[in-house]
Length: 384
Ligand SMILES: [Fe+2]
Ligand SMILES: [Fe+2]
Image (tube, rainbow, N blue to C red; front, top):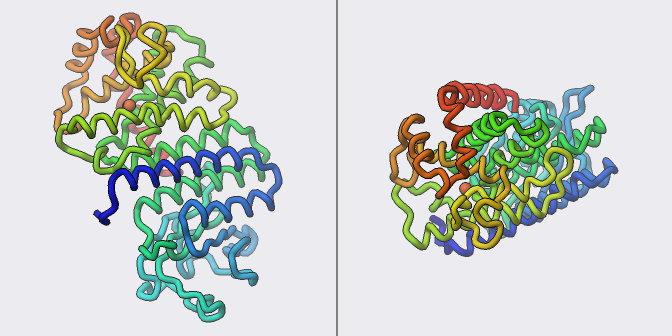
């Protein structure tokens, strides 16, 4: 699209992801409010490779948005709803502006004062876990001279998701568990926004995995861990190029090899995060959802066949159920009934027969399960 080689783009994306992963750790470890804000602000510039960045918070008393940290010394105060930042705070919607001076909402006063020339603007809301706007993150001008694009927006939204969560966590002294959950939602949402065909993928795989785990009578604590692993199982796709994920024809051999790498990336990303509570151990489950019970699958190397964790074997079945019922890479989706039959025919070779048995037992409920997961997600979207 922009003449950049796919591998360069991939490398850049992996680098940015690494930054995000490290940032998630740093933010959740930070206990001092001022230092946390400074850290978020510094990361904005680095991750987005921007010339300028500003962090605004909402003054709950006056309803104004004020700059807490920015390159310029003077604090800026903007009424909610006014200008670009005020607009983002008011609507809770991001704004991606390629040419600032042609946008009537842009106020050039700061440029006039500082001598800086704003070209491209990316402004995203900083929200808490309940979707209440706490402030705004804004970056100006990409250092490479190009305007910000949708990839940058998704990245900044993921970053803002983490930042908003960290601020909230500190403000309310909530458990670290809640911060991690919001990070996951931000990351999974960022991933699925890039691939329209997979928008409900993690939601459905999570719901199916939970139902299978319950059917296998696992303890609630283990069920929850498997659920989180299911929500995160494809997070490594963040490092797979858009061109491959959004392809509507079968993948070439070379593309397939790149695609398969997502399982390794999932392992790398999750291993770099320090999860606690229900989330501890998700890195040992999520990456192995493409392993086959009879041996083989990917990523190569251990664990093999039946020694693959039970959670991974459950997600493998839930994932296959989704893949078989949805049209991907030029292959048409089938009915839930046909998908269950497909999986049953591969018990012991591809899938754990006990897990398949559990799936067969809940087969009559699958339609309702899918419906309920989608409704729950819609309600969640309304509050995010
Ligand atoms: Fe996968
Ligand atoms: Fe998947």
